[in-house]
Amino acid sequence: MNYLRFKKLFQSDNDGTFWPGYIELPDENDSSQISKDQENPSFFSSNPRVVTGLALIIIVAAMFINKTSALILLVIVGLLATKEWFDMFEYETILPYPLLLYAALSPLFVAYFFGLNNFHIPYLIFPIGVIVYTGTFVNYGVYDKFGSSFLFLIWFGTGLASIGYFLNNFGPLFTFLLLISISINDVAAYEFGRRYGKKKLSENISPNKTVEGFAAGLFVGSIFVFFVLNYFLTVTLTQKILISILFVLFGTLGDLFESKIKRSIELKDTSSLLPGHGGVLDRIDSQLLSFPTLVLFVHFLDLIQ
Image (cartoon, one colour):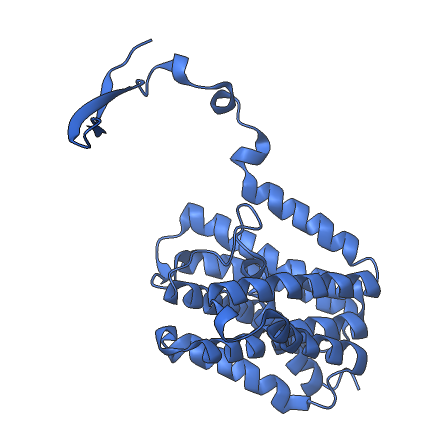
C-alpha cells in the first residue's frame, strides 16, 4: 500500500497543549484503495435523479387511476409541501402547522367538490398577478413570516385547487398528462441546455438554466400539451397553440418563482425527501402556476359551466 499524501492536523497532549501532527492518507491513484462500491456503483447511486423521476411517474400514474385515489395523492402532496414551507420559514413560533395546512388545502376541496364558479376570473387573475409581480420585482428578504405564509397560500392554494378542478371536471387521465407535460419540458430543457446551452436564462435565480434549454423545453413541452388539448378539448387551432405555449411558459415562471424564494433564504432545495430532485415543492412548483393559467383560459373560452 502506497501512502504518498499527508494531511496536517493538531494533536493534544494530556495537559491540553496542542501540537502539529500528521496523518497518512492513501494515494488517490492507488487502485487498491478503491472500494467495490466505487468500482461498481449501483444504478440508483449513480443516477438518483433518473430513478426517482421514474418512480414518481409510476406512483402518480398508479394514483391517477381514478378520481378518488388522485385526490388522496393531492392531499398527501399538500401535507408534505406545506410541511416543507413550514420548516423553511420556521413558523413554529407564530403559526401552528395544522392551521397553515387547513388554509392550504381548503381551496383544493372547494374546487374539487364545488367547482370554481363562485370565484370566477378575479380568483384566478389575482393569484397569477401576485406571483408574477413578486417573482419579478420583490426582494423576499423584506418579507416577515406572516408575509411569506400569505404568499404560500396564494401560490400553493390556488395551484393545488386548479389541479383538483381539472381532476374533477376533465378526469384523471387529462390531469395526469398535463402534470407530466411539465416534467417533459423540464427534461428537454435540462438535457438540451446541458449539451448546447451557452447563455444563462436567469443566473442570479437559477444558474443552471439556459436560454437554449428554455427554448427547447418550451418547444417540446408545448407540442406535448398541444396533442393533449387536441384530444380532450374542442377549441380552435390558434387557441390550442396559444394555450399550449402559455401553459409551459407559466410553468417555467413558477419554477423560477420558487427558485427565487429559496435563494432569498439561502436554500438549494425545499427538502431532501426526493433524491436528486429535492423536495415535493421542488417537483410541483411549475404546475402550481401553469394550472391556474389553464383554468383561466377554460373560463374565458367558457368550456366548463
